[in-house]
Image (cartoon, rainbow, N blue to C red; front, side, top):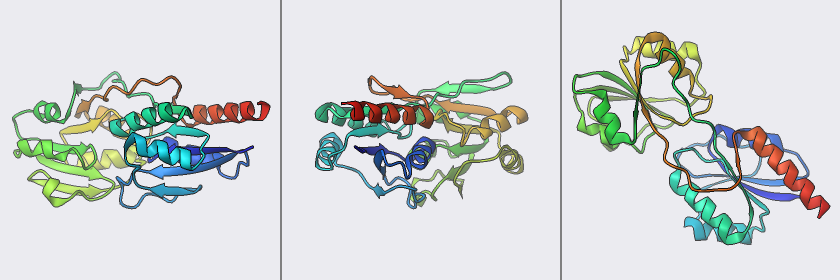
Length: 254
């Protein structure tokens, strides 16, 4: 018996899990991208792009597709999709797992300002003009239009829409993972004084934290939203794969 599994993805963990179940006869996986990135990387398993029409739409998709399991491997800041996943799991009674990667924590030598949202992040940069690296994605740039005195370097997978950019901003479209050596060069050549980032955790973009530590650059860190209440979580793709293996073994023994 195969375990038909929907993986809500777009993250490093989702990609790693897709690779791990590729070709495994125990599983029939489908990876779903939200569509936030214009050209997502092709997956090693069947994949789709787009939303579901809310929690009810996701529940209908799960029922119609006769899925056995749902894994939420979305970004830690994808709050709405996480709420929809939990609600859909409750509506369908499907086996459900959420991957909740550990958040970053400050280390010796770090200079972090922890803030609750983008408006607070903008204020935390300060009144004096600074050279700022924004690594927050495209959807949260508008808050920084309130501080046009700063020079912004906006790094995102896709170039942001021009109307969403703060004034005095330059777009740097790049896709991680990033190497420490490259981060050191980027920060030095652009004379960055402040980095604004989300506490997304994970290893793909973590080198910027080490680079900032070495160069004495201040980081404005936006705290994660509180996740919805769920019962079963995994820290990474390895733990999620172990959960799937256990589910497959349980189904076989039923």
